[in-house]
Image (cartoon, rainbow, N blue to C red; front, side):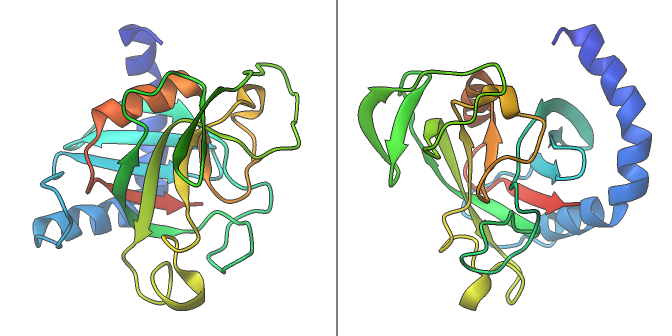
Length: 202
């Protein structure tokens, strides 16, 4: 998307985002302001994920600098273990995996297996739930909601990652993770550091 197109979309979306998600943004900024103990000094970036819109927003300070289409769980939202749902609440990026891997590289258990996936830009649905290109591993920070016990996002291995099913991006199609187009996760991986806060909401 060119700069003009991005700015136009931001202007159109920002009012609605702020009305619906003001509390979430306030919470994220508050956590940063009080110096919440996150691994890196990632104060300048915040990610918010809107499951209703199937979009991911990157804030630098108070400005939206990127909007990406995504795909969250086909089973809806929920934090329970083994639900295959996308968890809600505030998280942070605890690990970045896949640096220097080629676009389309397949990962199994976060390991590069040395294979490149075929990328589908139509509505093809493949049997395998492949993870491609890059992984941003999320850890919840709200005990009882997305941290600890049967609702622990980190233990559930909730990632932001690439997918070969690019034609399904924009619709709920995953098994809990947040899928992105491969070029988009490639860009996002380089843009934000470990420790970046990630708020997931409806």
